[in-house]
Image (tube, rainbow, N blue to C red):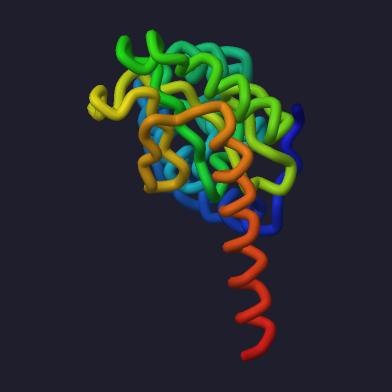
Length: 173
C-alpha cells in the first residue's frame, strides 16, 4: 500500500532537508542519516530515502538496501494507535497468531502496515514480558492480557469511540 504524504510529512521533509544539508557526507553517514530521517518523520518514505541518497551521491536502491537490512527502520508511518501483538513462546502457544489475524481482518491491513487514515498500525513483537497474561496485545500504551479473538473488535471500537468523543468535546470549545 502506497502511503500519501501528509502536510505534516511535507513540513518534516523540509526540516529534514535542512538537517541533511548541514550534515557531513560520505558513505559512513548513511545509517546516521537514515536514523535522522526516521526520527524526523517516524518512518522512511521514498522521499526521505531520496534526500539521503542525493546528499551522499549514491543510488536510492543502495540507500533502500541498507535501510531494509536493519529492522530498526520502518517504511510505513506508525499509526496513532499502534497495535503490537506478542509472539513470544507463551503467547504463540496460546493463540497469538489468531489474535494477529483478527486485528488484520478487523483493520483491513496486514502486519507491518498502517491504515490509510493512519489511525492504526499492526506489528508483531517478540515478547512483551507478560507471559502469565498470554496471549497479549498492546494497543497504544495499554496492555491487554488474556486476549481472545472476540476481544479484538471491542478494542478497535473502543479506540474509535474515544477518538469521536474527543473530537466532539474539542468542537464544543
